[in-house]
Image (cartoon, rainbow, N blue to C red; front, side, top):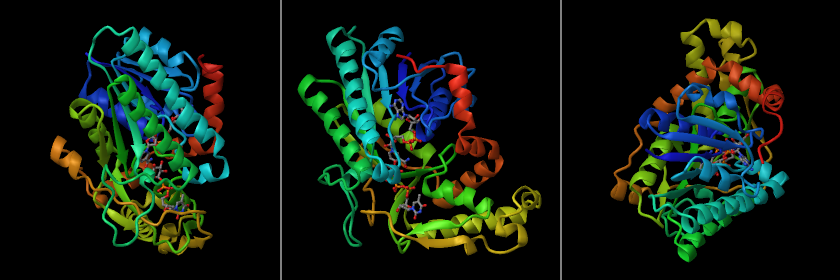
Length: 369
Ligand code: NAD
Ligand code: DAU
């Protein structure tokens, strides 16, 4: 039986990962450590709350000694590190917390793992898995080959720079102290439980409320989209079969411009309204309720400063070494995603208006220390 400490498990990818792990490994213990920032929501962990091996700790990865205590208390053998400030636009407006959480917070976890596993270690097989991003590699030109694991780091936003720094720390703890680590660098995710500030869920909820769909610049920036459950399966594969000290790129082999993505979201919203007449009553401000195209809401706005033009992942290493391939296509998984947001309006309304966080503070009081 493995005992997992999952940081950031109340966030988008972390929560999907916890759901996946509990389904696939029902005998394991899964302890989530999450500070419940604006992006973390206990409601996203509702489906696993009753699972006997599951526990939630409201706490901050930056708190000295906290991870160490949890690792001893729960005899953790696998630390899966998702916790981060993750939104590029926020990092442009306020970079400080990105450095504090993504760099200093990751370092606290590495120190804890070194102390508990290497200095006091029981000899059990252990692993520190660090979840990172393709943004560390910088921006590609139109004809450039996709990012491989040996592409030089060239982060362009404060977010990307903070993730790059954390990747380097993870590497250094392996190289210097022999900490058994793996790192994965993934492309853009979408799917259930994603906070509606990221492109796909933002466009969806704005469309449903009849608000403008803000496309930055010319809308021709390219991202490589992967359904979140495929990302979770890939992380599982790296944890279980990846070589210690290695990094693995994870991607969907699915490059699209932002404009293509937004247009597809609009088409799928239009289709959903045609198929379900109740939606017009629930979302009367959506153009589809009046049989007008949702794409009428698309509005070009000022570009993001330093906006990376193109990301694309070469996933050959994880395919070759670990046999990992995504199971979803963009078309099918986007339909699932649209369906999830239509079916879970209370979730996104609550996480967006912040009342939910007040309830959490009331329930849980101060952060664990
Ligand atoms: P998210 O913003 O949805 O969730 C982050 C979670 O971390 C939240 O639950 C938040 O409360 C928690 N958190 C933040 N600061 C914390 C702290 N100091 N202590 C404890 N918990 C804290 O992020 P996400 O999109 O789920 O991303 C998860 C990880 O995956 C991040 O490391 C991100 O860099 C990486 N990643 C994300 C994507 C993507 O497309 N979303 C792609 C590749 C990699
Ligand atoms: O590539 C992986 C990264 O993907 C992750 O590491 C980040 O955590 C995650 O946030 C994501 O970063 P992006 O900046 O690519 O994602 P975002 O959803 O913010 O934007 C996707 C693209 O859409 C980007 O080119 C900017 C554009 N965009 C975004 C928003 C929010 C718009 O045109 N309009 C918008 O309102």
